[in-house]
Amino acid sequence: MEAYILNQVFGHVVFMIGYIATSVTIGASEPPELTQAPAPVVDAIVVQIEQPGPPPPERVMIARAGE
Image (cartoon, rainbow, N blue to C red):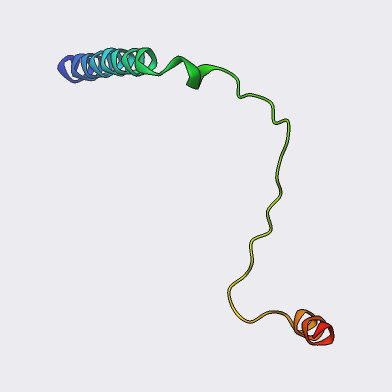
């Protein structure tokens, strides 16, 4: 029973050390601009995306009336 407990504790300690070592390495390798706050949006352009397929009936009627 003591061997099982020691095995569990040892496994958790090894996992914890590996997890901390990789998280520190990943954190140190990030470019500094990723950790800064994003710049505020001054001007935004709203774009409406057209749906594929035939135009709605009201557009066809307006186009024919303008011909």
